[in-house]
Image 1 (cartoon, rainbow, N blue to C red):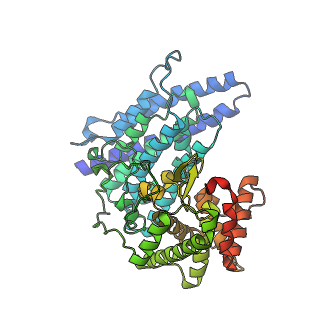
Image 2 (cartoon, rainbow, N blue to C red):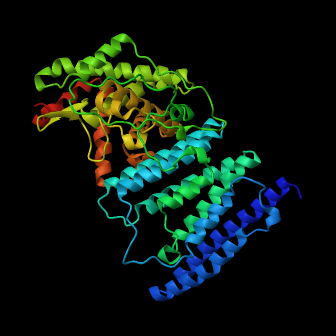
Image 3 (cartoon, one colour):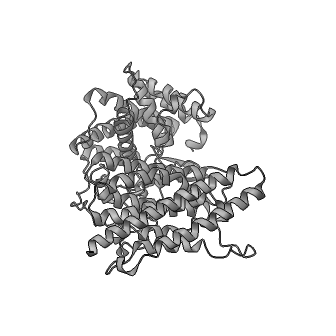
Length: 501
């Protein structure tokens, strides 16, 4: 048998064994559930299932030497190592391992998911498939934001994020593997089978003893990423031009110009390292940053150094309206130039959407004064600035310091995100309905902007959380006012003394 043939036979046998083991774990879980209402009886069933499945799985990994690869790392050793960890004695609960906090879990999972998604999307030339991977990435990041926003204790937040994302990620990886050459597909399938086994093991809880830990994620990532990629769980806030280009956002936005109002340091982005590099089909030259016309740049700088009082509103609000209108127009032009336009008949809707979103999110403000100190306006869970962009969701796509310190940069980022959601979500999924109601497009786009990809049609759900229903009602009111030419009613937002002094 040739080496290639041996590889194929071995991979087929191991993949089949891994899938069979995962299926047995799932079936064992069902048996444990229906075996009896008492927890002791269910636990005995689970332990018996574990005792049967684990040895079988490990035996399936012990292939004859004749089928071993001639050289190079064996990705299936990683699968065996993950499963072997479950065969160790239970941890001494008198000395529990250090718990992973919600913040740590959100960052660790985001780092892992970003590396895997970026690598996988880079293997495909299909723009639609890349958008599906972007959906997986953004949904996972919004899961992290929701985790941090919730006050409900989560004993294993990293496990929770893994479970939420894996069922979205795995189908996309499987589909991609069908279109790749054998070498690339092999490592992708290895990751999917190992992840599926880990996913199935979670249904058995502590009995099986396969926790989702940072080291477990590192072992999974090793199945796909090269050793030169560095730590797959390294998290930073650096701008990543490759990420933008890969997912259809084009060149980076014009460089941010920090406001002179800010005396404190802005968030620093960790410099991007070589670990971000995509060694795959996606290896295109990085474009130069976009430029901005001098007149708009001067207007943005003027507004960036202006903390308006109530008496300033007659001058401030028209100036901000002009900036937002120019920002919307520049976004439409930029997106068309990279082949991602919307139909011209929706351009006015988009312009109104930008103004209404800025009104809803910040009352057309980038900064406020708190306890005598000027700072970027920020929500309790980290959304920042004029358009309330989430750095945790959009890291890599935008300069985080620019989101905090430059009203023009924040506005361009928010407009770009709105265009993405309008084009690739609301329009792509025909949210205007059979009646062609364009207002439904605006409502759907804002719902995604506010809550993430899973919120696209929340505004028309009869049973919806009261807080979300109120958010959607408030946005619609503002959007209709903008549509009627009454956008300067945004001035009503400035009644609060906290915003003015």
